[in-house]
Image (cartoon, rainbow over all chains, first blue to last red):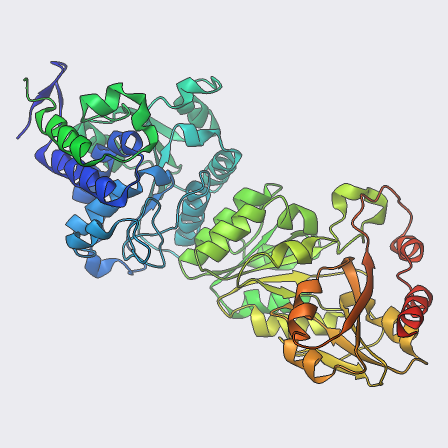
Length: 274
Length: 288
C-alpha cells in the first residue's frame, strides 16, 4: 500500500513500515537502540536488500557477490531485522537482542551472524574497509559491487576522506557510497555540502530523497563508469514516526512497553492521512 | 625482509603489499612487475590499514610496511578493530625499532610498540634480531590467518641463533640468574654475561610469550629481563611464568621518558646503560 506523507508526495511502503515495527520490537527486547538513526536509513536498507544487492543466504560467501558494508553502525538493528526477514537467520532470534549470549545486538559482529560483512561500531572504519574490498575485487577480477552506508556525521572522520582519495585514485567504480544525510552535521561544525566535496574529490554524485524507494533505486542502481559513486540520500531522523522525529530524547534510548505500543501505533498511522 | 616479502608476492597471487612511502626504492622491481598487488599507498596509515583489512576480508593476505610509531600508534584503532575484531589476518612490518631514527627525535621513536600491541588479543608480535630470524618467523607466520607484527631494526645482532616461532632459545646455561632478552639486545646481553654464571634465554616471539621455556630454565630464584623496549614490557609475562614461586625480578630497558636527545642509536644505548658493560654491572649487582 502506497500512502502520502505530509501531503508532499512522499511514501512509505508496507515493507518499510513492517521493518520499522520489527526494529521497535527488537529495540524493546534489547533495552537499547538508536531509533532515530535506524529509522532514517530504513528505505535505503529496503531498496538495497529488496532490489539492488545480488546476495542471498545461499550466495553469502560467493566471491562474486555484491557486498553491503554498514559503516554507520547505528543502523545495525535495521540491518539485522532485514537479514532475519530475508532468511539469513530465524526472525525469532531478534527476540534475544542484547542478551548475554545473543548474536543480535546494537552493533553486529560478523564472526557471529551470517550476512553481516563487518563488525561495526566505531565510525570511520566501514568505508575504508569497503574500499579495500572493492580494490581486492578489481585486482582479482571479481564482479560484485560494493555498497557502503555511512552517516553524514560520520563524514567528519578523517579516514572517510582517506578512503575517498584512495577510491578515486584507484578508479573504484565497483564502490558506491551511500550517505544517510539525516542532518546530523547541522548540529556540529558546519563543513558545508558533503556531496560537492565528494564531487571535487572525483566521485560521481547523485542526490535523492532518502525516503523515496523508487528514487533511491534509480540512483543507487545507475552505474558510474571509471570512478566511485556517492549517493547523498536526504533523510530525516526518526522518519516513519512523528514521535521519533520530534522528540530528540530518542537519539539513544529504548522504548518501554507502553512506549513500544505508542511508537508502533505511530508508525502504523504515519502517512495514512489521519 | 625484501627477499621474503618479494618471494611471497611472486609465489602467491593473493598477496597484497602496501608501502607507506618507505622502501619504495628497494621494492621498485616488484612494484613494476605486480602493479596492482604492490603499491606505494602514500602517507595515510589509518585509512591504509582499513583498506588492507578490506582486502583481507575477501581472502587476500595484506602486508603493510611503514615506520613503527605511525603504524602502531597512529593506526592502533584500525589494527584493533579492522584486523583483530574482524578476525582477519595480515602482516605489519615496521622499521625504526625503539630509536633507530635517533636523529629524528621523539616523533620517530617507538619503544612502546610491543607493549602497545600486547594489549590486542591474538596479535602475534615478532621481534627478530637478524635478517635470517626475520625470514624464519615471516615464513611461519605471514600466511597463518592471524595479524602479525614484525619489528625490524637496523642494528642487527652479530650472533646468529636458530629461532622458532613461539619458542625461546637457550643461549647459555648457568646457575645464578635466568636472564631473558629480545631482538637486537642479544649481542649486548651475551657480552655482558660472558663470564657470569647465568642462563640466557633469547626471545624473538614476543607474543604469544613462551612461558614454558622460562619455567623450565629458572635457575636460582632470580629472573633478570633485558628489554630493548620500554622497561617492564614483559613484566606480566614473567610474573605469569614464575607464578607460585618466590622469585626476585629485575631488569633493564628503555626508561619511560620523553627522549629529547639525538646522536646515534649507540649514543642512546650508552647513555641509558643498555650496553654490554652497563648491563653486566646491573646483573652483577642483582646477583649479590
